[in-house]
Amino acid sequence: MLVSYHNHTRWSDGSSTIAEMVEGALDQGLDELGISDHFVLFPDRREVDWSMPLDLLGEYVAELKDTASRLDGMQLRLGVEADYLPGMEEQLKSELEKHPLDFVVCSVHYVDEFPVDADRKYWDPLPQERVNDIWRHYWLRVRDMAAARIGDIVAHLDLPKKYGFRPTVDLSAEEDQALDAIRAADLAIEINTAGWSLSAEEAYPSLRLLRKARQRGIPLVISADAHSPAHLTRHFGRARELAREAGYDRLLRFHQRERFEIPL
Image 1 (cartoon, helix red, strand yellow):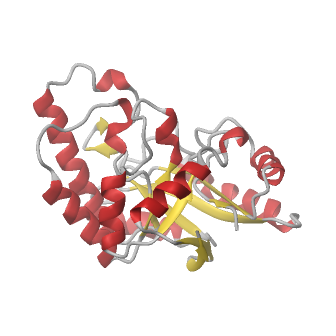
Image 2 (cartoon, rainbow, N blue to C red):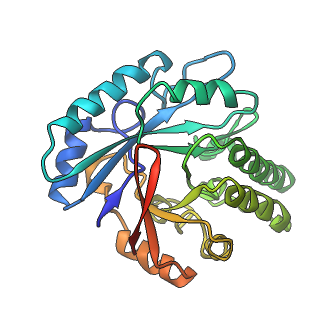
């Protein structure tokens, strides 16, 4: 099966409508297409320009359901990419549980108020010590997100490398804590192929981290993180090779928050 779940539309920061993404998925031979637009719930409910408005989650799901009901030959899976913010765990889960989602991608885009992947201009002036500190706290956020069991799939596991800024200290202990928490919560991770087209110049996560995940028995999906139809299966062949190199021979698909294994 050809499955791509982590994808965005104009409901958040994508460039295309749900209908246009569906058309692209059909053209590319997808068996299942997931749409997972951003949902960011801050304590003060501030609006984020790359996320859907908080009060429109129901309308978003309704459009996905309506589109799915009219499809023949391909499954449209209903998803959301939910940001982890400390202290908002129960409120976020309560909001998501109101809707018939097939899967939830959970992610960390903020370390306190620092926007990890918004723009390299936030990283450029930082001394290396601060870069190291952001990386350290990022892994602790991922650990805490997994422990909260908000979603089903952990997104772009080593996201802070997006603009090429890497830690210069050993953070293997923090990485291991995050991966152990993901395993304990029985969550999946993704090979997010978008990183190959960015300054990171490699998928999320790195092969090193992917091998650590495989050693722990953490299951896997392959995602394009597409923001337009042209990218729905971007680098998927390369991602399969990476998965095999790390020792994987199975992927997951999702329906109504339950998961099913499929051959790689």
